[in-house]
Length: 187
Image (cartoon, rainbow, N blue to C red):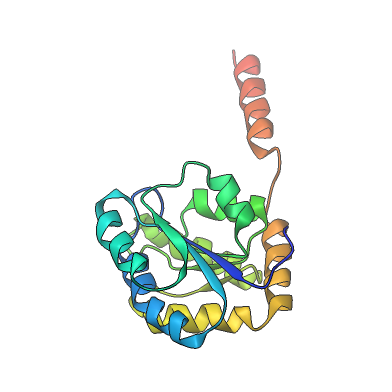
């Protein structure tokens, strides 16, 4: 965990390819953040396809932060963030847990068996995340969710601790040991 400074650092990522819904909502929120005067720094991974258009718009938005097509060092990006806005795939929720980061999750509605919604519901019930359905995610909703959390630093801390409670350090090594054991004992 990192101590929160005077500026809320928000990482927005729809994964390596970006997410249209998150890209649109982020862009719609910029004017609201600028008008609010609340100190926020936005780090936004757009995906390659949307990068140029969104980066140009962000450059003229008058906000602190940066827009990038891809983040090479996601662990460092998570470490530097106070709050993460993302989809809710297994990799993302695992990273949120490992990093102990509070999040606003917007599950991809067309994921197989709606597993992203199920992932987000588990973290939300556990107090680690806020869940915003894809159909409800827009600039106003994103702004309102972030501002509600920005006004409650103790809630962000509790959410981060709850996220850490979902982490299973060493799980991959344990899984590999079980598989090796099964292979070695199979006739």
